[in-house]
Length: 212
Image 1 (cartoon, one colour):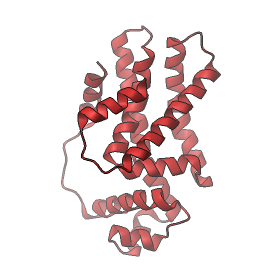
Image 2: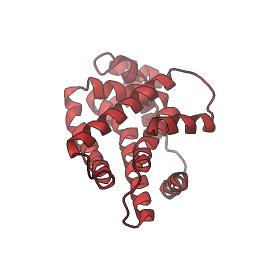
Image 3: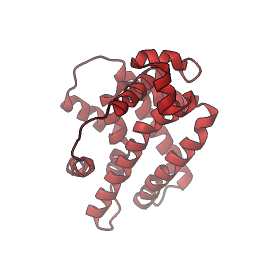
Image 4: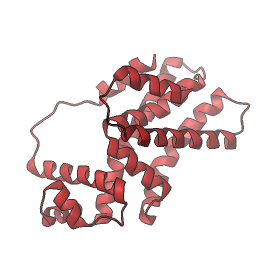
């Protein structure tokens, strides 16, 4: 089933850990702080000094690692967004390999698309807020990254849905995918605001209802 595929994909991506370099730790703290603050206040609402203070590093370290606030915003956004997209494609590829040329069930395609986003949002609540803000009101400089990261990914899923639903026009599928992703994102933002203990069974039930 898809859960076994998902476990396989995650295991394949895991690599043995090593000693964390101090500079890597500094960059990580900056990215974490930027994810929280940009998600709440947006690009224009946070300065580099505030970001440095939130990350507990000096301003020079912020400039050293990222150069500018624009670069920090892009790197913060892409850090998990790119990973989510890669996991979506990996899940879909694994499912299609198991299907051996047969069209996948629609629910399985949708779950491959939604599961990584839902899980990333639950594991990193600030990520949902950042993505929601970035998609609804993106800074102009982010448009090229959204286009290059999102459009090829969606094209693969729309292709899978076209094979599963040949009677539905591509334009209709594109609209449905956009609505589904929007609903998933808004759901994630609401869940992120509720501070409750993680429960795998409840999270699986949430995902099941979203896929339906």
